[in-house]
Amino acid sequence: MAPPALRPENALKRADDLISVGQRPAALQSLYEYLTARRVRWAQPSAVEPIVFRFLEIGVELKKGRLIKDGLHQYKKLVQGSPEGLVSVGAVARKYID
Image (cartoon, rainbow, N blue to C red; front, side, top):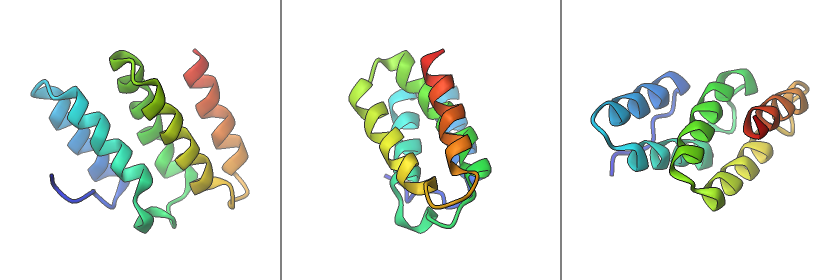
């Protein structure tokens, strides 16, 4: 498997490319690897939010509840130290409930 994309735009582009060729599970795994990568700890919540939204959309379509749960925990750990982190976690939780 390819190494995780370190920039949020690259991760989204890679996921879109995988979806376009019918590889939804691979796209979900790619986004999950981005969320769990240690080198992404510096990212701002506003930059990572679109990745989490796409991760949730694909995960719900594929009915991968455990992977979604773990991804959301990783996201919470990623953004909990920043001031706008709680707002971002709230927006992501609302999107997941919808």
